[in-house]
Image (tube, rainbow, N blue to C red; front, side):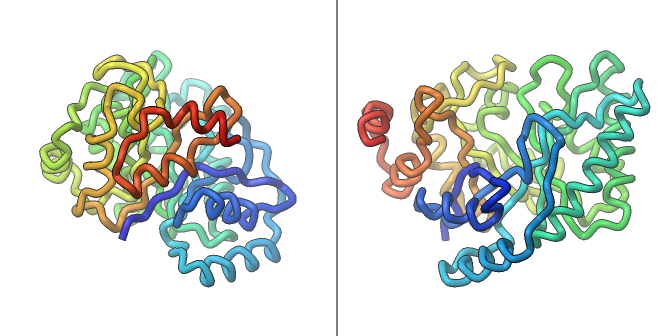
Length: 294
């Protein structure tokens, strides 16, 4: 069964119920959300009544809630501990974020590993693992480290770096990986033969550690290290390659999440992209149609 959705909002007044309704409007059967704005760490109280209503509706819609994921905000950085106060803020915030996810019944949280900001890649890897060991000490929620494009001093653009972090994490049962197709291509990986890529990942880390796949085309050629997402089929990865990844039987039970850009920064493309993916047929006029439909 195809498990396909997108990033959706999480608003104060509607929370999980609003996230679900948005996902359903796109024809999705899973989704990803931030428990607040991705650009900051401001958070508000989880309303249990809205969570219960959302869970009841998901049962009606036959949505597997275990496949719904949360993304931690971009700005928390575990990779640099030069400023110990900032490092501990990131650790404590992520502890609280996992507590919020527990309130919501979420099992998986996606995290950008962080940027070493001059302290060096090896130190960055050790810092991330140190932070994760504090965060995951008594956790039953799994953190998925996202593969990165390698922009600036990002850690995690190489699978070997992800492996080194995982090797240093003590709670092995609750650490995993989120693949991002744009990031992988921008980092230099050839994902046009995805099974060959999965073979290499399986040998190094293990396919069983993959808990989510972000499906994005890329505005840039492979190896650009720029991290600029593009709509499905309109970038340098291409529709056929992305379809092969989405429908790969080895990742059948793994949720696939679209993070493609809004058209003209205004129109969400997800309903149309999900329809195109389900039909397995690229529509080169999709962008113009989205503008017209909206």
